[in-house]
Amino acid sequence: MARNQKDGAHSTYKNLTEEIQRILERNQNEKFLRKLLTRAIILEKLMK
Image (cartoon, rainbow, N blue to C red; front, top):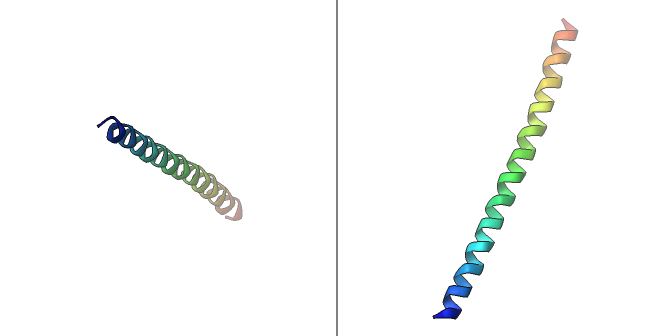
């Protein structure tokens, strides 16, 4: 029984770390896209 709990805890820890990694990657991607869009808007206004 203790082994199953330990394996379950490891599995939960692994799942949580993977989910956190995906959230961090998504946030980094959103920051990049936001910066890119801001630059595109600025360039568009300068070209007018």
